[in-house]
Length: 175
Image (cartoon, rainbow, N blue to C red; front, top):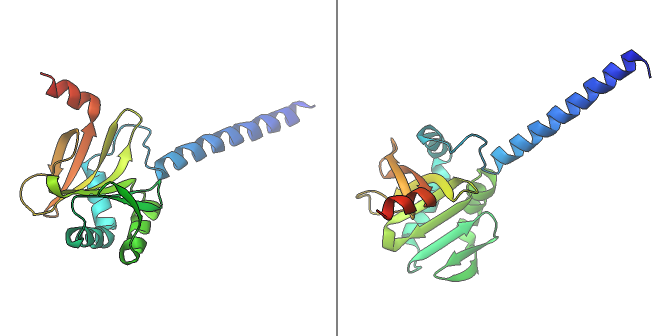
């Protein structure tokens, strides 16, 4: 192998390595994982503006559903969890749920009537942290999200950015 061939081989190996690293980072970001901490309120505003029509459609459906308390959609499942049982996603909302969960990278969508809140989670970490959009169902007060340690109103009335961290919440609530 000549010196020139060795240089070309080294450049090719470096390019392949950089391409692999780039693919891992992009895949992680598309799956809702951020390399450097949680996304802030500016990302929440962008999500709300970009997905506004689908978010409003889902909110309207959830507000008018006859289900008693909990409704939960997850990117991992092809069904819906309602009042502690798995059911197929109703036809009238399936296209919207599909777009939000698979195309627009929301990880979970959940409603708890008892807590007056609809949650659209778009980021979570392996350290029991998450964030996303929260909608207050009756338009009054702040959302109630389990383990929430930060909540900020967005420009659109009734919508909030929330951040949860179980470990920090636990320490704060043990005092």
